[in-house]
Amino acid sequence: MGLTFEDRPSDSAYVDRVWRSRSEGLDRMTSIATGHWTLVVWEEAGRVRAALQGPETRASSAPVPEDTTFLGIRFALGTTMPWIPIQRLVDGHVELPDVSRRSLWLAGSSWSLPTYDNAEGFVRRLARADALVRDPVVAGVLDGGSVSLTVRSVRRHFLSATGLTAGTIRQIERARQAALLLEDGRSTDEVVHGLGYFDQPHLARSLRRFIGQTATQLRGRSPDQLSLLYKP
Image 1 (cartoon, rainbow, N blue to C red):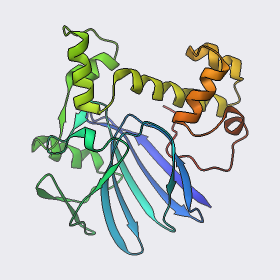
Image 2 (cartoon, one colour):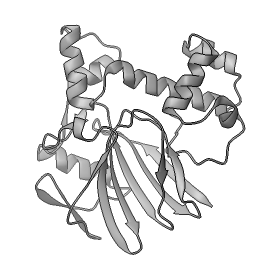
Image 3 (cartoon, rainbow, N blue to C red):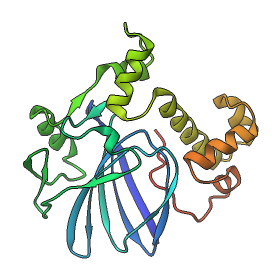
C-alpha cells in the first residue's frame, strides 16, 4: 500500500516526463522540490479534477486523498502557458474549472482529457494553438550552450519562463541526484565529493530543504513516501 508510481520520458521538446500513480492507505507524502511545473489530472470519489502544479522551492508535506488515480504531464524547463504567469504557480497550484471525464477547460478552450499514452498528442495540440510556448534561452543555458545575452538578460529569461533562477534549479537537481545516490547505498563522502558539495553539513542542509529527508533516512529507505524521484 502507499503511492505507486509509473513514469516514462517523453520525446516532446515541451515535456520532461509523463507519470501516473494510485494511492491506497496513505494520507500524506513528502513532496520534493522541483523546478518543473506539472498538469495533474486525478479522479477522486468518482469526480475528475485537474490543476496546474507549480515549481516547488522546498520539500513539504502534502495530503494524499484515499483510493485516487493521478496522471501528470511534467513540462520541460522553459515551457510556459502565456495566459498564466509562472510566478503565480511557484510553491502553489491553480485548479482548473469545468473538468469532466472527457474534457477540461484550459487557456480559454475545451480540450479532450489527456491520458498516459496520448500526452504528447495533447501537448502538440496546445502548442499549435499557442497555448504552450518554449523559451530557447532557458533550454540553451541548461544544455550547456552559450547565449549572446548579458547575465541580467539570462536571469530575466529564467524568471519569466520558470519562476526560478538558474542557480536554484541547479541546486534542486543536485539534491535530487544526491538523494538517488544515497538510496543506492553510496556513502555520504562519495556524494559530497562527487556532486561538489562543500562538506557533509552542506549536503545535509540541501537534503532537508529540497528532499525533506536526511541521508540516513534515504539510505535506510524510510517509510516516508516521496513524490516522483525518478532515475533518468
